[in-house]
Picture 1 (spheres, helix red, strand yellow):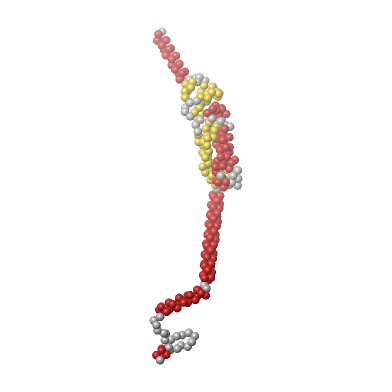
Picture 2 (cartoon, helix red, strand yellow):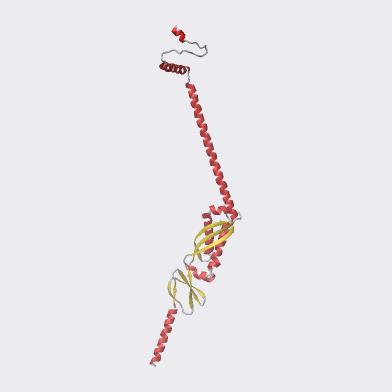
Length: 267
């Protein structure tokens, strides 16, 4: 009888321990727990840590509330009907205070059911408002508009958009060639403009130099007077006298006939 009581007591203790451990549940870090009672979503949301639940009646579904990253590549038509493939990275998170509603209305596959379609729709809608060249030159503006539209879509489904980064706009090969040809033409036009400006400057410099030389020549002509000519003649004669050795030339030339003056001096 005594042993029977011990066995029963031991079984009761084991059952109690099983019930105690079954009533404990842990919510991991970065998650929230959705409390389910016979499969029905309860309004209670379990935070990180240890919690009690009713064994065999209640279960806990954990949902991550940390920032998650989704990368996507979407093709769409621009305003000028160019096909643009946009690569984008989106950071988002689930609202910790609404995980029960998210689970009840959408389920655990919210990424494929909500996030991916919302990204594609936002990119296509905003891309259609810009030309292909504007998508490149106005990337910050495009990114801001996509972020605004996508944020509103995710908010309706209990998610928050943290950030968005447009990594690349890829265009067709024909469009890339057209852009390259346009850039080449612009560079050539700029070079021609610079060359023309250089030629104009050089021509102006030559005109200025010619004007300066003409002005200098004009001043020199104004300086030539009869007195200056007479002074120059005197200077030439003085230099000739300095070099004369005191002997008269034997022959003179010019307009008069040549005369031998040597014989005259001897007489």
